[in-house]
Length: 82
Image (tube, rainbow, N blue to C red; front, side):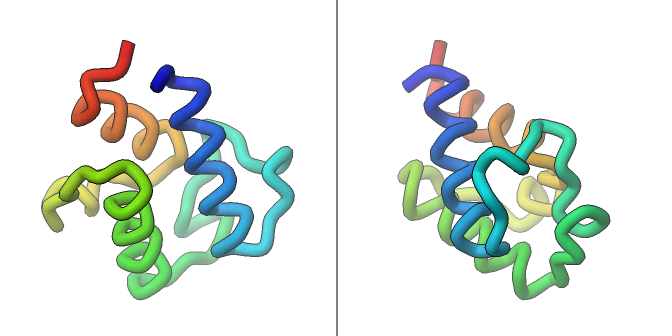
């Protein structure tokens, strides 16, 4: 799975969870500031990332996922995607 495929899957999750068109999702999109996501939204999003990508995301790492780019970078690093 390459970086674009990871981004596309994450964009689809965000689109479904936050009722956004996938085309509106950018790497700079900030979950709290742009989507007005609260802590429950973030936890549910992280759980969905874990299910989708089969990677466990510890709480201390989840707190560092602030933007879409952060999520892509984290998943890419754990999946050893090229």
